[in-house]
Image 1 (cartoon, rainbow, N blue to C red):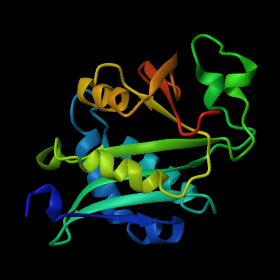
Image 2 (cartoon, one colour):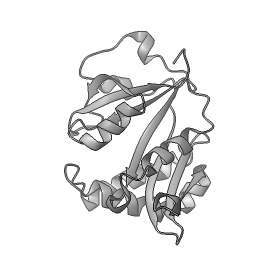
Image 3 (cartoon, rainbow, N blue to C red):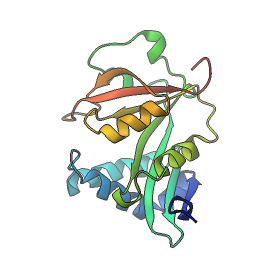
Length: 187
């Protein structure tokens, strides 16, 4: 059995993810404390206040990767964007109305995808990505990615994502690439 085969990926709805918040937080806090993110305990607390709101969405989908022994090693989560999403409003250069059109079903917003350092380069991120999107009927996936995190950028490009713009996704945020992956021919 290879090391990647000793990792179990569990798909979760919002209530299940809420029950596993401590595991999501452990992965998030460890990964996002690294350079270049360097999140603080206060910013992690703020992120998990948001997580508690996100898991209450009926359309929330998450995935948690654990070792056979139960140690959390990776997370992914998101939900379809509503017609009133502000995601597109944060771009540094406007995009076409057709690209930014949302209806609550068109676009799955991938909010987080993170794998702890010892388990990187084993295909865990791809498995998490596939699990969180397994039952989506969305045409496309949208995410923000830091351009200075080369491994993540390379993974996203190899999975078919394309950059459509740049954004400061929240006040005080570094510049992020806005990336889209078409899931169907019309996406």
